[in-house]
Image (tube, rainbow over all chains, first blue to last red; front, side, top):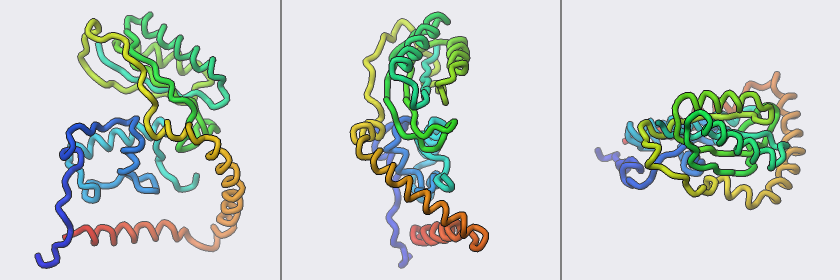
Length: 75
Length: 170
């Protein structure tokens, strides 16, 4: 308990209900992608299960349209 | 009826009038199959995140419409035939929509990120041309080293992720 340093993370989409998740919103999705193109896991991003799932499908849709990379290795 | 969004990407060298014509014909296809076009957004040219059919750039168009599965099937069939279209993707946005309740919508601007890019395109292209030379050198060097050294980058990343986890833990 003495070592407890990290703040409790709150899902940003639960905190801000107006914020929608859309595959066209590249700027938003970039927050949930590493520079290698991987989707940032929930334990790091702090998203709740519902919103992480929405982010996940949005990123996958955006990848198909080359809005967001599958990977940045070997390009 | 359902509400659908279809984004298609035309190859970079396709003239703008031709892209508009494809969009116009797509609207006609939707109407012919009993659907209702809602709006068409032209996002303009954008750098692709990865190469598609040897193209690094593409011209994006978003079609929003209401209709049934026939509209989607017919639209995708016509897009598939056109050789200047390098990618298309359809997404169901809403399941039960009343076609009478929706009219045509104002077209919305391209996603912020894309918009920003087209504004500073001049600089970017110049940068890219310069970078390309540099990248080529770097690629050559990497190929030379490939046999000798294993990919250190990969291991580096795994490690950094692990330590990130520890940092965030309690």
